[in-house]
Image 1 (tube, rainbow, N blue to C red):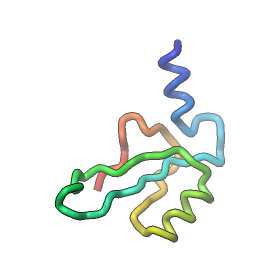
Image 2: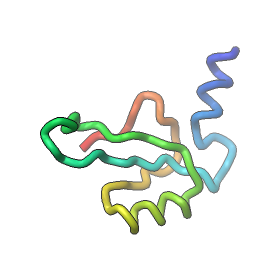
Image 3: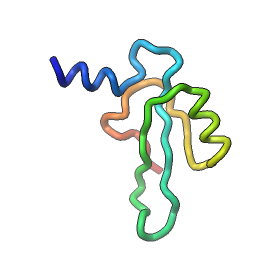
Length: 71
C-alpha cells in the first residue's frame, strides 16, 4: 500500500495541471548518459524551462518511474 501511494505522489494522477518535464544534461563527454531527469511539475513551469533552457521537453501525463527521459 505504501509503495502504491509513493508512486501515485510521483505521477500526474488526479491533477490536470501537472505534467512530466524532462531536463537533459549538457552533452559534454563526462555526462553523456542518454538519459535526462524527469520531474513532475505544473505545465506552465515546464514551458518556461523549455523556453529558457531549450534542453527540456514536456512529456504530458504519466509517471517518472521508470525514467521516460531518453535522447
